Length: 206
Image (cartoon, rainbow, N blue to C red; front, side, top):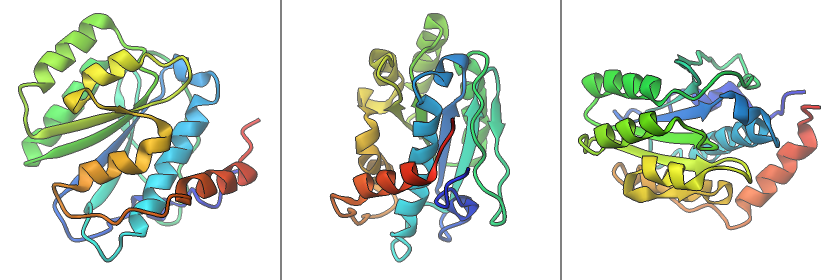
């Protein structure tokens, strides 16, 4: 059953701004374990709900949802569809993520990415990506730690200012992303816990 919160209006254009928020979900094989994909799914939906609360405050013009394994796949959604379940397979190729961001940098003055992952990366690709990303000040990337067994050190390395967020701090990650666009309104302290309690009642992935 798909939660009522996973409505695709989350991915619609929110405001008439040039800033796009890229949500990249690691769907490599290791993400199949320990409910990692369900957590990532819920966090993506929370971001959409949270940003809708900021409707009177300029945030991002659009949210794009991408899947990462050997390639980066952009999920095409519209207001009549729902965010699909994520199916894990393969490896998380950071070289593919780098190619995707390169393309976006050619079209935008700033690229803002939140990566949801357990940090199970190839060491050489991790080193190459970090070296490359440090040369691009217009790239802002934060990672969100998914799973109790996540390699948080890898996720810190890939992130700007070596900042990797816990799932509980997802609203802070979005706020920090939005600082270059506007001042965002902090939701009530209980918003995240209430949201997830409602989602888990609705959602059953077997």
